[in-house]
Length: 309
Figure (spheres, rainbow, N blue to C red):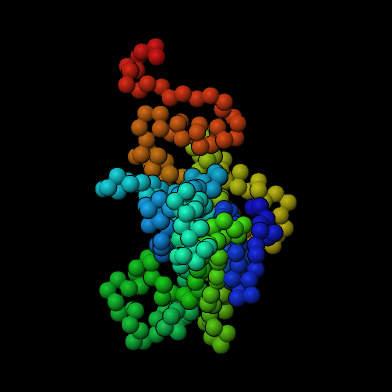
């Protein structure tokens, strides 16, 4: 994984500012509080509204393929959020920014997102104060589907808050990240004396997932072949680094989890692909930007399959 330590700008309030792109995920993955942890996320606020009003556009970081897109009833295209997304001002957005800078309008958030510890392994202290289970009389445990809700934030107090203000969009480090809370208070003793959770769900970094899916789509590599490629990136690593990678599962993971990721993407491509769709995507989004393809023209799919055209 590329080192982005020189891209991190530390602030006095214990927050950091980072550029748009891969640096954000690198900082979160390497923060001491978040090692060996899996994060979930809430919905991202404000961004889609500003995109709809044509103040900004949203771009994916180069090489990003691990996301889903769908059409709304109104015909708008929406997609899943990523921490490495890039916000770009439109001409209309630049006009708004000028009004903000001249104090004619108030500064606004165009990105507000909360990620939180999933509480895996029953080693985190819950919001009610107990570890691994709720204390007697906890209201959250009494809610219908309370603790079974996938988005339940009751299982741990650690939060990763990211935000972007309009006034920062033209700066070099527009994305502000603040990590708050603790997994367990210092005066709380864990019964099994093991504070490292066992992560059962997929926890690969987005950048790693991108490489996995590109290897599958472009070269049609098998699970074994992709696993070998992931392990190659660990060549020369120390025993401690390898042990950490196996524990947090952000760079490598089990064969079963890798198979599930590949099977999910295979199904998604099959469900969403019409004639030539996959090839068209690979050529324009993967091969052309790297200079592997100089010219590409889509065929006329309205003609007969047996036609010379």
